[in-house]
Length: 411
Image 1 (cartoon, rainbow, N blue to C red):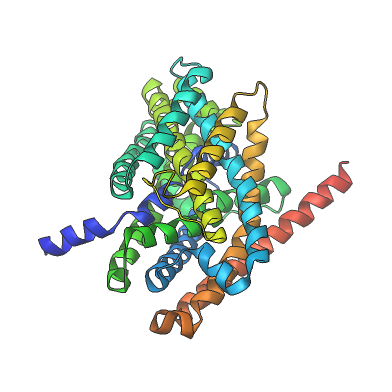
Image 2 (cartoon, rainbow, N blue to C red; image 1 turned 120 degrees about the vertical axis):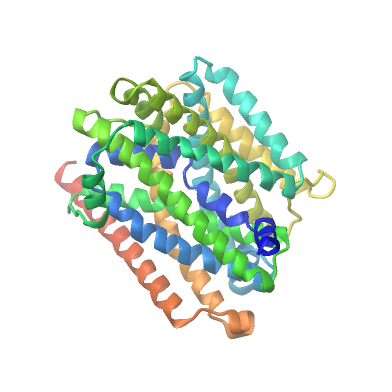
């Protein structure tokens, strides 16, 4: 039993890291705004979100261990360079917006501790660059698995907020639906920040780089389930913390740092400080990975060498692209009066629009017997995945129609 546990601990990591990256600066902001505006009314959405995340991540991990290739590689090989280029271009700009949000969250969290963004952002950028490009994946993975523990600060913040747990439980299992543009935008944003297209690329690349094979499938499934539940619990307790304090007080927040500041007089300085520490951790954590997954995808799409800890001589394109993403993301944040909240909202909505496209690619690939053999999807997984994809497309269409209607009615 002990031997199997040690083996499991040596194999898990990619999915837990990937899922926890959902709880980045943009994600924390969305969860905080959801709690402040709607109280506990959106808690129920996390149940189907976690379920769909498990389905998507398991397929992604299975594609990686069976084919030994990243998702970008498979799309290029099976659908051609033209389609790959357009998906790559969309991801580049979306993840650049996400990277800006991460450095913005890092800057804001440090300002809560009286550190200027003109000091914290350059230091954070250098740290992120050094961590990813100078250390091997095994060291890199252990560091990030350890950092995941810091997300427990949000659980403590929620407990300090002293919510009505009976009401929380009721709202968790009772769907609350409003047919209004703001409510639908919030649901789409929750999906867009919790299940992202880049996750599928990063997890598959992480599984391949870790060297996991078909015999490790059991561990990958465990990794996916634990990681997805962890993501959902962090989101859950952030919504609870803000729903218990900010919503009853009628306080509207526009960012995670607003939520941290607003919690202080309502839930105490410890809740506020823990919230800010969680934001700093999540921002720097995700600030490493979002540029990394973009770089992985572009290198895979173009057939270039990639990997953490590799020198410029070994992977020149990988090093240059990652460096450009870090410099752009960090530099733009330093521009005075930049409306980063709008950038963040836009990037989350684009994530939601792109996700069905990526899921369709994955479903077509994973159902090919010549590619997956006996590891192709079973009927239950196909039904769940296609149903989830259909719901995402429907939500996106409703959002687009609602947005156009609002523009026509209120030009």
